[in-house]
Image (tube, rainbow, N blue to C red; front, side, top):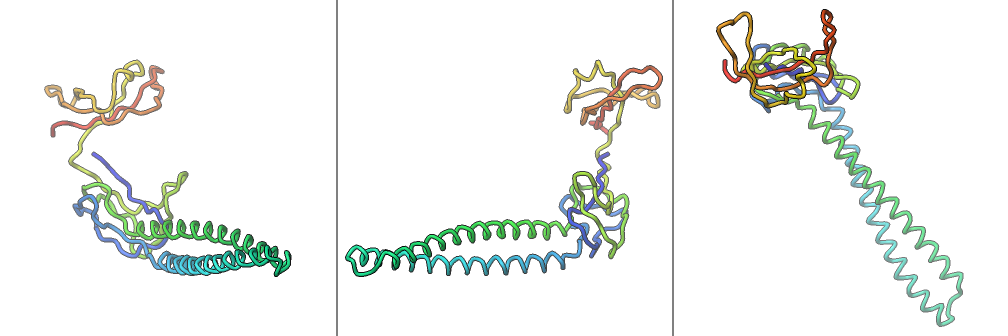
Length: 231
């Protein structure tokens, strides 16, 4: 059967558990919640900075447009000899400086927009849903206990396990020389010394990518998982 360990994608404290051991659940059901308060505060603060930065950019762009219009007028006056070149150069420098600052503001706003999306995603992940339909076989933590998010080198704190009892199968060893002739989805027949008069129809679900040496014979064997096509 398929067995899944439930972990959290965010660190925090378990706010609420919605299932108990032995409960039957459907894929997508809400099974646990991590306290969202810290992330909600972080999201609100980041959104506030984001909105303020957008208003600041609008002000910069308005000033830039005014400076460009003024620069056009001054250049015409300079061509007529009414004002000095210094007056024009000073405004040209200011206009160019503002243009650079506007580009910096745009990049900063883009980064903050990404920050808002990242925090919102984490906030959504505080609501943990069942990845499969099945039975809750164990609940490992209580409400109020802390969890650590799963990372590349750390699977994270296990909260509970869910098993799909409807998918039954068996794991067997196959010889290295037979592996090239097997593939996931391939129909196979399984026999057992416990059921000498029966042959079970099954389908290959997974083949191990690395083999293990048999301690008795030294031959390399690979784990092969199958799912029965009949009960």
